[in-house]
View 1 (cartoon, rainbow, N blue to C red):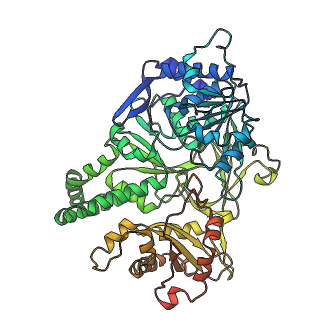
View 2: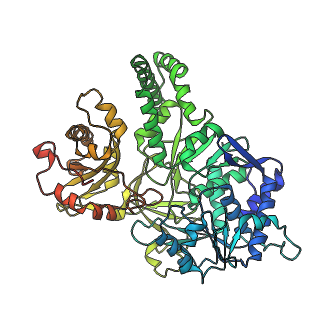
View 3: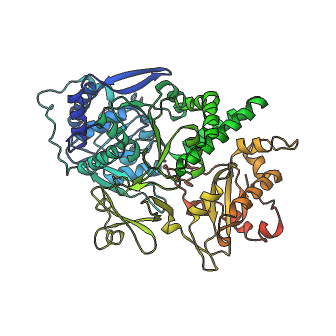
Amino acid sequence: MPTETAADTVTGILKARAERTPEAEGCHRRDRPGHWSAIAWGSLWQEVRTMAAGLRRLGLRRGEPLAIHARTSYRWQVAEMAGLAAGATIVGIDPHAGPNHVEHVLRHSQAVGLLADDPSRAESLWEATRTRLRFAVSLGGLPSDADRAKWHAWQELLDRPPSPDDSALPAVQPEDPATLIYTSGTTGPPKAIPYNHRQLVAACRAIAGAFPQIGPDDSMLCWLPMAHLFQRMMNLVAISRGTRIYFLEEPRDVMTAIQEVRPSVFIAVPRFYERLHEGIRSRLAQMPRPWCGLVEAALRAADARARCRRSGQRVPLRLRWAHALAELAVLGRLRRVMGGRIKFMITGSAPTPPWLLEFFHSLGLLVLEAYGVSENTVPMACNRPEGFRFGSVGRPFAENEIRLADDGEVLVRGPGLFAGYYRDQRQAARFTPDGFYHTGDVGRLDADGFLYLTGRKAEIIKTSTGRRIAPAQVEAVYARSPCVNQIVVVGNGRKYLVGLVVPRPSEIDRQLAARPDKPPATGETIARASEVRELLAAQFEALGRELAPHERILDFAVLPEPLSVERGEMTPTLKVCRDRVSATYADLIDDLYAEPPIAAQGPSTREAAP
């Protein structure tokens, strides 16, 4: 089992790694497709110290906020560590955030410096922020009309070695502020959560302890936005364990990068795994018909074996033979889509459908769901390779104290818990008198200690008949339809529930392939096609039998395009902003309630306006 460093600050973890294995390959950056440059741990630490000295020359002082508005990259990692080494508080800004969000973060955090990989985008905000920012550093080239009094090139800071006057860096302490994390803002403007070094180190140790399988022989692809804590904490775990980190700047190249890197540990949000499933299914559908039958038989054998193993039953001899043949002919090849060296994969930030986890498990790809809240650096719970249960978010971390309120709300207290939002005086209502935080999530614990989340307390739908329904639970059932990409359940103050459905064109096209009048796989046509509604209605009717009558959707509308982060319908971490969705499709929702539901009148022809 890997040993942990005794460092008690984030920069202390990197320093300890650089001193322990200075020549070992630590980070890799992608210069071009198929070519990665390696940086040793010792070289990384030296670059961090040089950049920290450069930031201090620009006027950065201990405790001051430093904003990073950039795509995930090796330079993001250096910038974060350099800012921390200089004593700063790191403020990550999502690279896809709109101007209003960026402006809010820069003003609210009172950042004195900005590091940006797109100077033109940052420059568009300059008029409003020039009096507040002391300096700005471009991770790429300088804009043509840059204000040289404030804009500086990344390389110019690295090219100047620390002088005797500025080489001394402040002695960072565990209680020093380390970062401000801005919430996704599903119910209003994003709030800022301050964390110190001690809390980040506590999270690193907790995650590393939960996954002792991660070690110096492993590799991990870093491709999620580093503005969020999920990716940065996994990077810190990798540093503490000496695991190689491969930085990918362009997320669209992730599947190609996987083949190049062949990671052993991989983290992603549920949408990645959904698209991976779609890609696998699409490729299988294009195979010659005789091969399709062989593959489907192999998948059935793999699924049956996986179900036996999850339930603790003995796998019958006949099934073992069938699986061995499936492994030889099909499964090994399918696993190579993830490089062929995966130990396990982690999913978080949003719920992952259990059927999807079961699908990958049958292939021999273990996807482990974890659960955390922005207000606690230590994850709340996670499934582990040696103990997992699909549909749950795993067992709680021992570092946390978790209890359930009378209404099922999950409460937490522990070393990673925040003390309150930054520059927000309304804190008392967020905590119990004995210091437990109200997460807003509703859940239950089973007899073996696995935590199941059933929804958000604030999102509970109360129908006009007095029923209280958790929409996430209902959505999880209907999302098991392979034809459903996204679904949002609506019904607050109404007599019954309805659904807004984003279809999965590739799967619908596959299922309708036998029909001569099948619709083309385009958003507008699918939204209008009666065949698609009939297909979805039949699947929803079958799935709805698993729910209580008042939990079933009695009508639905097909949307012509997916929910969008850019339109504010989803947060950057892919959580649904229900109020925004309801407002956007208010007329459509009213139409769904204007006539008797499809349960009473047959398939509806209602559609969303394209």
